[in-house]
Each structure stands twice: as structure tokens, then as C-alpha cells.
Image 1 (tube, rainbow, N blue to C red):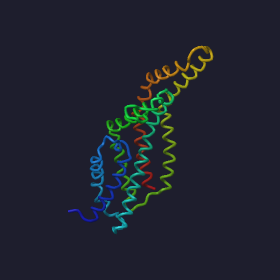
Image 2: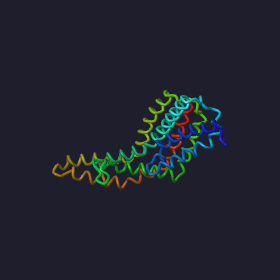
Image 3: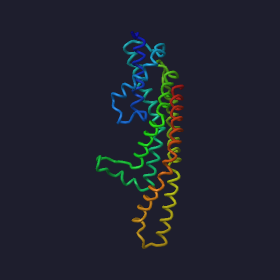
Image 4: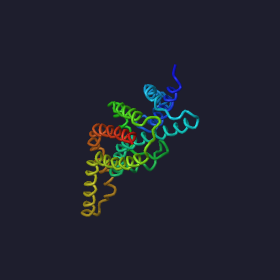
Length: 251
């Protein structure tokens, strides 16, 4: 039979893991039912409960409420840092949309009645697929479980460390997005320059009508170059996400 300390440790650990699963990819995907996420949160916390039972906050009513809120904040913070790292892949797809002329499709999607991004959405789904197929999600999950050791249930999250990690994460996200989409963007930039020179050499030609098909053709023809580097990128992003979570937990 579980003791009171064990049950409280299981409750608080489950709260942190549930908050993390709601934000962190690939578990935040809406295709995963809420009941599955709840069971997964419990499965994460259950093996850790015996060790965490010795690091409990005050067990009064107010103490439990405050501790629960702190665990929600901690879980969301860890999940946000993880999502921020992997957002670089979708940001790379969004850059390809802008430079390749596919951003026009974001104006309106009649199928869903909302804005939609072609390559951005495709890269986001591809990132989730690679995380699941390669087993990278297990490494991310292992990194999250380490936060319980570095930041016990009675610990306090460092807001200063969080702000520094978010700032550094935003910078690294844009750099990673440029590294993924950079070769294709460079080709499209050269195509834009060539079309501009052609418009000067032959003003009678309707370059505006020619430019979009040419850029879309180049994007579709060379998209495989950007996609081929994604497995290595996902591996590096997975390691970075783990380091950021453990760095925040370590304060």
C-alpha cells in the first residue's frame, strides 16, 4: 500500500509531467488523445515517486496548492524550451514558403477555413515523424526525467536562468532555421537576381507572371536538398533540447 508521501510525490510529479506533455513536441501533437497523455504523465512519474518522496514540500492544504502551481510552471517552462528548439524546423519551412512563393497559400485555406503554411506545416510534421521513428523522443523524455533529480519537488525554478535560456533559444532557433533553409534560399535569391536582370534586358516580358512559376519549380526541384539534412538537424536539436532542460533545472 502506498504511503501518504508516495501518493503526494506521485501527484506532484504527475502534474509536472502532464504540463510538460501538453507543450513539448512530439507529445503536444493534437493527434495524441488527452487520455493517452494523462496515462503517459502518470507512467513518467510512477517510477520516480519513491525517490521523490523524500523531497516533498509542506503537506498542508496551502502548501500542496502552491507546490502544484510551481510544478505546472516548471513543466510548462521545460516544455516551452523543448518546443522552442524544435520550432527551428518549422521556421525553416516558413522561410522556404516566403522565398519560394508558397506564402500565397497562407492567405486562405478553403479546406480548413484558416491560414495554412505549405512547407512550414510539412516540415513540422516531418520533424514529429523523425522524432518518433528515430527514437529521439526517448532521449527527450530521458532528459525531462533528469529534471526531477536536478530540480526536486521542493525546489524553485530560477526565472533568471529561464529568461537567459529563452533569449539564447530564440537566437539558436533562427540560426538553425537559416542553416536548414539556407542553401535553398541562396538559390532562390540568385533566381530573383536573374529575373531582375532579365526584366531590365527585356522590359516587354511579363517577369511577374514568369517569376512565380520559376521560383515554385526551383523550390519543388531542390526541396530534397533541405529535407536530406533534417535527420542530422533533428539529432542536434534533440541534444540541445535536453541540455536546455537540464540547464534550467540545474539553475
